[in-house]
Figure (cartoon, rainbow, N blue to C red):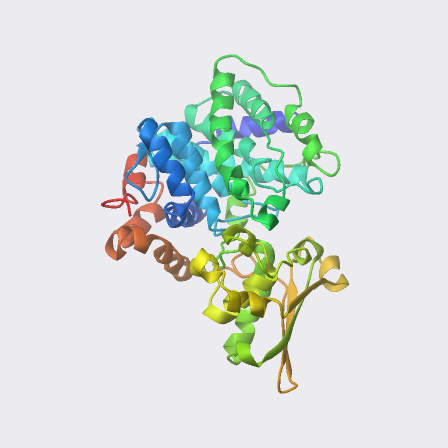
Length: 447
C-alpha cells in the first residue's frame, strides 16, 4: 500500500470511537488555544479590513470567529486561518517544522458549521487532518531552501479533515489528497523577515483549495498517481519519503505539538526563554547592558534585523524580540504591536549580536536551543542556556497557563465572563454542535 493509500484509508475510516480519551482531552486544548489565537488576531489590520470587504459583498452560514460576521464558507475559513496566524501564537509541531492546527482547523470548522454538524464529527475530522498534515510535512522535510512551511503541506491536511467530515470513501479520499497536493503554495521565507504580510495569508489561503479538492474528488475528478510525492517533490530538499510504518492510529502526533506564549517566530523562543530565566534570577535593567550575545542554531541565526519595519518583521527578529522583552517585561501580543516598534527598543536591539554555533547546530533536529549572555556595565556577565523552548513535550505548559493565554487574547473582544464560558465550551470540543462552539466566541458587537 502506498503512502497515499495508507493515509486515505486512515482518514476515510477514522471514527470518534477510534480516538482515545487522552487524545480527545488534548485535542480540546489544541482547539481552545487555536480559537484563542484566531480571536486575538481577528481585529488586527489588515485582517479586519479584509473581513469588512468580504462582508460588504455577501453573507453566509459560517462564523468569522471573534466577530459578528457570518460569511460564505471559503471566505470564513480563509479569514480564520489568517487571523490565527497573524499574531505568531498558533500551535505548532516540531516533527512538521510548522503549524498543523491552523492549516486544518479553519477549513473543517467552516464546512461543519455550514452543515449544522456535530462537534464530535468536526473534532474527529480535525484529528484526521492533523495526523495527515504532520506525516506529509515529515515526508517533505527539509523544505527546499527559501520555502516557508505555511501553505505548503497544510493543504493536504485540511483536505483530509474535510474528506473525513464529509464521509468520502478511501478511493475518493486518496484523490482528494492528491488533488490538494497540487495546490501547495510556493511560499517564501523572506516574506516574514522582510515584513511582507502576504506571509500571514499562507495558512488561510490553503482552506479554499482544500475544500475545492474534496468537492472535485467527490464529483469524480482524479488525482495524479502517487500525487503526494510527485506534486510536493519540488518543495523538498530531497526525495519525498514517508516512513514505512506511519503508525496511523497508534501514534497520535496531535498530542506532541507545542504551544506558544511568546508572540514571535518559534526560532526566537529558546532565546526569549533564556532571557526570562535571567530576569527571574535577577532583574535586568536595560540601561546597564553593554552587550547581549545570542548563540543558536543556523535557521534562527539569520533573524538579525534590529530595526524591523512592521509587526511581522519584528516577530522574525531575535534582536528586536530580546529588546522588546527587556523593555516590556514580556514577549506577548502587545510587545510586537506597531506601538512597540519605537526608537528606544530599536536602539536596545542594536546591542544584540546573534551567531550560529556548532553546539546548537549539531543538536538538530532533536534540540533547537540557544544561549544568551548579557554583559553588564559593572563588568559582570550572566548566561542562560535553553535546549528546548517551553511549550513542547519536553517542557509542557500547565493548563492554567494556557487558559491565562486564552484570556489575554479573548477578554478584550469577548469580555472576561464570556471568555471564561468560551474556554469551558471549547475545551470540551467533542460535545454539542459546531454552531455552539462558534457562537461562544461571537462578541456583542465588533470593535
